[in-house]
Image 1 (spheres, protein in one colour):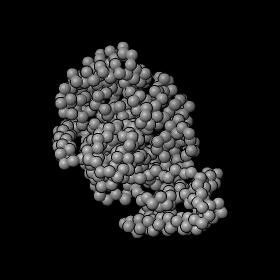
Image 2: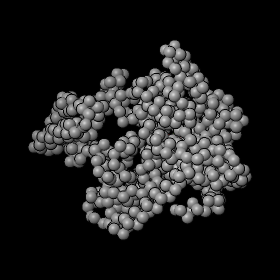
Image 3: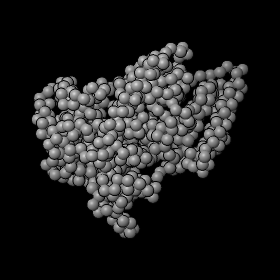
Image 4: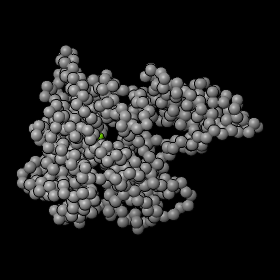
Length: 588
Ligand code: PEP
Ligand code: MG
């Protein structure tokens, strides 16, 4: 962060979630100090010990203060804080660090880092889940001590009480999910891309965001106001009065347009030539279901249930999950609710589940691979979902399928779980469909075989693009290669749709591509039956579908297959878009 107080600092990044946010900036410091082996002179050893013990004391009083301010002293949050306070009394962490400072003249940071690494490594070798969990607790309190040694304040989203725009180097999807219950108006980060889960959650909960700004944390200074323009991907630090006024007007205009679209969004999306498209919502948290309904969702096309497992210390049991799913299902009466089984790993993680530390998590033990290994977690979730099926039209969706064997194993477990529920006398619907996400290129290429084994397909373009073009979806440096209209992608999508049609099963799309207005004519022309997207895109997507003719777009899409590059396709799609929906362009 720089001290000089310039105004109107304009930064450009990746528009991650639409909307305008104007508020005071809140810098969320997360990076730890870099660790280098360093020493203090002999005569300063006792000062170093004292500095360390002071940082420990400060950490304790901070934790006590947070705990005492909690409205519910019995809550999960309060319990975690008690555990952390207990660990700060722990002689292993504190005494060993003091001993290293005294014995080797290490600087406090380096000594603590050494002790921490030793403890974490020994926890990794332990099978006991409870003790493993303590490993994460120790990491968190060590983080706090490091911050206090460096004289920095430890921040968390849950501490925010005033309207702010969060400025951070990076945010996890779990951080973003916490924003729903805090007065966070928007956020801006140095890193990140449009299809990272952090960006996806921001769109889902309707928080304007710009990511991949490179150096917003360097330009920001405490007290500065910040404007986030999530339409254009622009962030302005310390705007002057006239710039702020300009953005306030833009905010009012976009609100007005949103309201006019919402008026018709509960009506079905039928094309000019009479085809009904199901336009559904993607949700991450049950709280989003109401907004999805208000914005005209024809159902939930993707419920990312892994978010139930984030921001907590213990696994949700069957009863807890059942109640959560039931709440969502009941809201939608007889409209479909597609519940996706947990897709942990990749850029999402849950600290209490011991995921291996992998070099390449996106290609590691993620989603169905994790579930087929941790079968008890999987079975518990399937039981809870099946039980919720009694209350509406529930469908089960399996993520990251890469081949036939995974479908066979999943089907077997699915049937076994149904048998168990019958034996236990717990009711569920016999009609629950089992579908798979097509988001791995191998699955796309054998979609004709897979289509005979399941009840529906849902195309996950976020991962399909990541794996097909080999671009890490959270890496801002390769975002320029993210081309949903790449000829390879179009061919894969067509293959998947053809396979589904031939087998007579429905095929939808739930990746971010499905909620981008520009791609709607292409997706209609390709023949998808259903689109699922962040709820705020539903009104505009429905209005575009109503203005379109499927037959005309089928011809148009044929033409797209004659182009050689994603750029050429994009140019053609843009020109058609302007021709078909000129008012969309004026509204910008
Ligand atoms: C996808 O990959 O397109 C998808 C919808 O799933 P997620 O973004 O949760 O990986
Ligand atoms: Mg995916």
